[in-house]
Amino acid sequence: CRINGLLTTVAVLKTVGERLLAIHGQHDNQSLLKEETHIDLLDAYGGPELQKTKQTYTEVYLECRRLKVLWRETSGSERERKRQIDNLKFQLDELKKAALKTGEDVALEEKSRLYQHAEGILTAFTEAYTLISGEDREDAGAREQLVRAMTAVRKVAHVSDRFSALADQLADVSEVLEELGREIVDVRDNTEFDPRMRDKIEERLVFLQNIRKKYGDTIDDCILYREENQKKLDDLEGSETQLTQIQEDLHRKEETAGVLCIELHRMRTAAAECLSKGVAAHLTDLEMPKAAFETAVVYSPERDFDENGRDTVAFLFTANLGEPLKPLARIASGGEMSRVMLAMKSMLADADKISTLIFDEIDAGVGGKAAQKVGEKMVSMAKNSQILCVTHHAQIASLAEHHHYIGKESVDGRTRTTVQKLDGKEREEEITRLLSGTHRTASAHGLARELLARGLDKEK
Image (cartoon, rainbow, N blue to C red):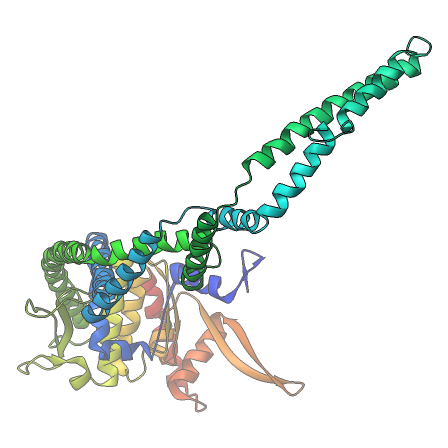
């Protein structure tokens, strides 16, 4: 597929084509037999103002549907909602009583390890401090011996820069050792060994372990679970208020939709009157002067509205004077349907300002004088739009400004479709063939020339 020489997809071609061409074939008659399509045809004829109002209504209608779905989802089962609320309250009450703190389990486990090894820690740090400070020892501690070493080296520091640097290093180590001694004694003095406190910590750890089994791998997970469930509980408890708000919004939207339904009915009724008169006038032109056509628009305020509002639309028709109007599907013959469709398309083409219309054998079932009138109607429409028509009627073909013959031929075992433009004698021969088939008489040729002459007059 190509558009203006550029490759494109079938879907894009279809979208663009629908804006440029209106293609009508024999099967289009079937749409006139389906009443569900009539309201769309009337709305298309109604023009921009009606279509704008329908678009506004459609938006309101879709919002009503959304609110109804939301109400059903929010309301759900009342018993299930209460069960969820009770379950959430129980869990939240347990978590709130737990008084959880971020990282609490990690800190308590650290304290538990310290209490479990408190006696060994106290002994180790007491001994370490004694060795450093020399406290409660007969010999000097490590720091005192280090000071002595520094003093000895200082005595010869003037001899060499290296000796001086070593003395300084010994002084630095002495200060570090002094700081270590302070930290060691701090650990020693602050190490507790309280069995009651240890028991409390162990109890808290067991409690936290049970909480984690229920609500998360860590205390932080449990805190997050508590916060999320609190939000769920708030939403469930607030659903009553939410449901009330949804119902109020839905009521307002339905009131708006109701007003728009009445406006759509008013506009459709006005458009239906114009459409009925126009189609009736076209039918008169198409050799159906006694036919009657009516677009019935029925408003049903008692029923719920749908995508089209509260209207139903039906095309009613009778071909004969004195007979009651009835739905098209019940009374129209094939030839009548072709002319009704052409009349409808004439009206809709004027409303839609379509530049090109293609009619594919819509003259099926139409013969004689009626076929002539169908052709003349197309000539009239061609003043404002390009009309392409596939036909087997000589009366219609003779009225065309340009005539092409479509045929088939077999080449190398395959079938090809050919299109040949006919002019002058070739066109006369084709019109003669359409009139008389293979038996081409002088009178048939004369009639063909007469039809072509009439066609030229119509074009002028």
